[in-house]
Length: 97
View 1: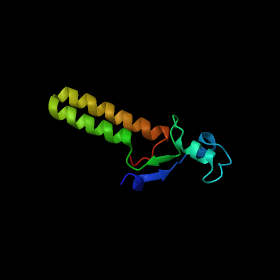
View 2: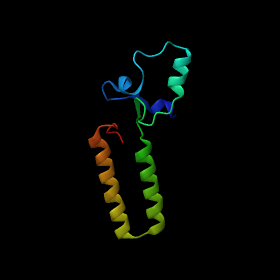
View 3: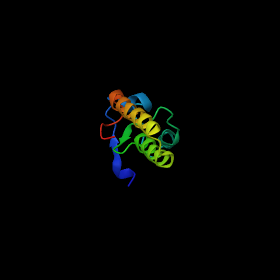
View 4: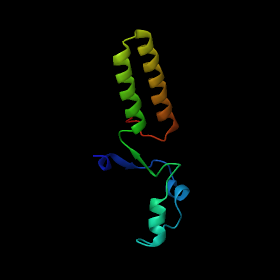
């Protein structure tokens, strides 16, 4: 299911900023090394269901279900809404998140 939700990056020239251009010859040693190198700045794809949105939403639901405090609930959902708005505003994630 994970691979079915992967979409190409909406950022222009993402591949050229993250990987060598032109790409290494298919099945060459450079091709394997490029594919296995850790991408600390992210890859050139996005998920329909973002890991950031999923994790923060699940943790908020679990934490607030245990706490049962209205003030805490209001504060957490307000911060969560701000977090989602920032993710959409930055443009690094699709607005489906």
